Image (tube, rainbow, N blue to C red; front, side, top):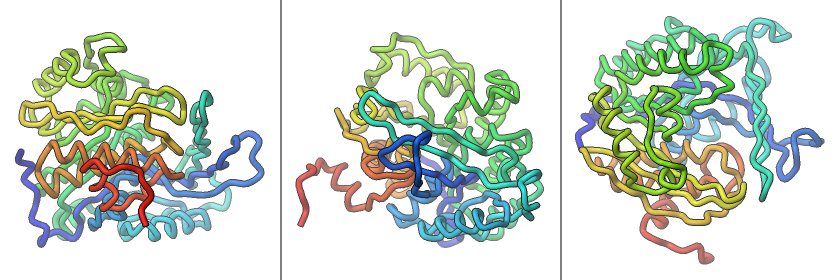
Length: 365
């Protein structure tokens, strides 16, 4: 499989993510609506990938985003720095003292347990990242002067505003101009698209973006909602790997977007909020590759599991150029990330490699 990665020695960054980063407020084992205290984390669908690639896989990563310049913005910056992700490309908007024009986003998330599913409530209106315009970023400097091997972005950021969609489109175009590999997580969120045109708008925007993408990530619902493809098969069949319906969908997608070199998705069967069957599937070079499986995976915090899958997948593709290794690294990293709290991974490369090689959960001393 040939992704034509730029040489490492000519690039300042292995990977850069474009997206919004919010302050996550976590009530721990309790509920949002009855909480008296919260633990804070940073998180965002696109950013989580950059952080995973940095902290778990040791790559040089950065983030393109924007913050309102106030104490919450500084807290977010500090959390990002703790994760080792470069902050030099963040744009800071002056804060008006109230948030009428610009503010930083908050994401209240409870983990769920047993029969009670995880629950998220976002407060992200007028955020700095949603107001970032395509001309606010010097793309030629980033992709040309600095050099970037891989750009990752996604449908969450594209849905935030008219300008964020335009920013994503400009970013993927410029990335391709300079030979940077592009990955995109469709990540359809009905609540984000509802106020700006719904599925029709999502499909219009994502269709344009998809034409510049090398690696596409998304489940069957994402491909239907974001790009209009229909996957054949009943619910039971869709939970099985290598279904004819999934194969047919990939064939349709690749016919419309022949530029796609890799298509990948996680497959999750939710038994309870804390017990899921977890695995993944990847298409490359005309073949489908099945990941290692984690049946009845016990979950502490499912939020960010898909992003950690993406970072593991990207690491495998960049390091080995091998679709089988990539999907295994992705599935293992996503599984490990869901055993700890917060959006981002606390796993190490050694732990991921051990799971890929079949290690058990026995105590290690």
